[in-house]
Length: 401
Image (cartoon, rainbow, N blue to C red; front, side):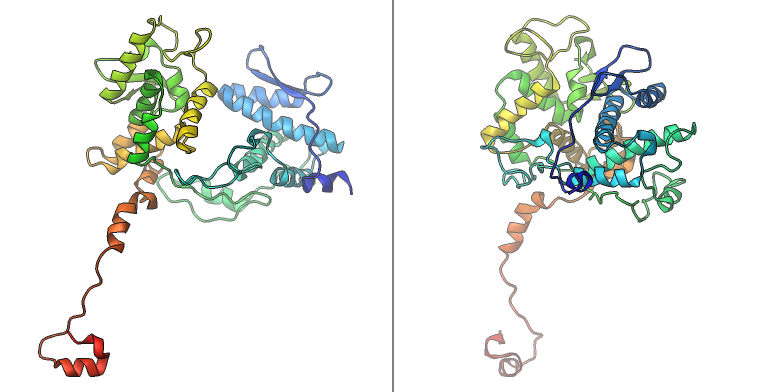
């Protein structure tokens, strides 16, 4: 069996040669190096264009990692980057659909991948690469070849298939208009639109009670009352806290602007208790710190571990982003705020994103459904003037009132 078929069937792994390295040159945050440590110049040119286009460091690193996967495949197949065709893209898609994702490796005691958690109703992550990851990998490769195609480099035709019909339909579409149903490009995966998932109030009380210290309780309360993302909260410094205005300033993920987000009085109470327990932080230092070991800022992975400990205790699989969904759902369901006001607080670019939180969720209808199922069966009634014997003769003996 040739190597291409083995890769497409997930029988062999792509050799993990090369790496993405942090670079200190201006406008080139990351570089891709091959197995010999040599810089891959075509990738550097593309990453430099992304940096010049004011893409964030996270975007540049994500695209560099995607291109590392693509070049590893080309190196394994012995195909030059400038001679790649749709055939190699098909091999990449097939391999991603069948290969295990090393980031999803679990211990023997962990729930099975893809199983549904009975506490939250959320499915565990599957063992392989998600459909969104596959589509993102194709977008990265497509953008790489589109960049070089503008300069007459690389293959004549972009190896990643595109859908001209979709491009024409979405080119002049207003963000307020619904997206038309158009066909996907070849090899693109069908991704379902998952509704936002909020934490029910009773489950929220259990999760809050599982927090082990004032720091964790303050973080959880700030997350659910402000709707701020976890990475945004971790960057809060003492000068970003407006105690009188009951708001904190965060660097927004999309705009990268310093913007205020309101929070509940309860969040500031827990924050005050947390700060009273430790030393005061100097200006420029993140407020959230580790509690064990050397004093250092709380990292995103350490923050995830905080929620993992609570999940292990409750048998759940909540995530920090579920708190953001919960905040938006509570605001949208209440009568105090209008939808544009919720959009401003959540910092959504489009009001269509905010309107998704108005959808009715089945898990929140449990009490109403229980009441509906327990309703007594309605008794049959007939207009006055009819004889009971006549009704029994027509509809049966048990039909007479």
